[in-house]
Amino acid sequence: MTALDTSKRAQVLDDIDRALVNALQDDLPLNHRPFAPLAESLGISEDALLTRVQALRDSGVLTRFGPFFDAAAMGGAFCLCAIAVPPEDFETVMTQVNAHPEVAHNYERTHRLNMWFVLATETVDGIAEAAARIEQETGLAVLQFPKLQEFYIGFRVAA
Image 1 (spheres, rainbow, N blue to C red):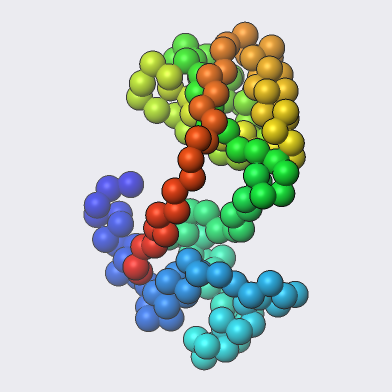
Image 2: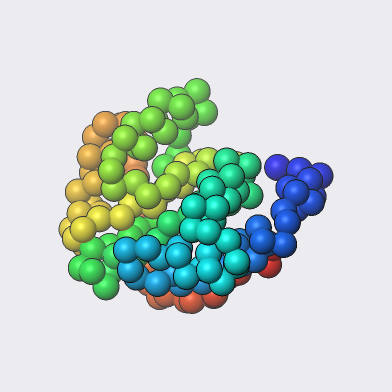
């Protein structure tokens, strides 16, 4: 995305969209209708709020929307992984890697280690098991970079 694209997107947001994007970066209540209180605070219906969230996703203003779980606190694990994939095989390997339900997300990088992805598993041992399956399927070594220390940076983007 270019700076111009970002500028165009920013110009199409009205005050309610801006307030919505800012509010969605905070915690939503844990109940069966978490958007209802937010909609009320913005002075719109819950249906209108949900329509706006979908429009923001469709336009690319919101690229990811969903909960973030602390896998370790629930007995599971996360691990950043990397593979050096021959460029001509990248699409094939990406499809193989992404087929695993343990793969949280996958990014291409301009580096010798050109495929980076996160494994999220229900158990700590699940990381090694998933990485071994990927290695067996792709024939490529999966380098694992487990989290040594967690830092909370509280990243927010003001809309």
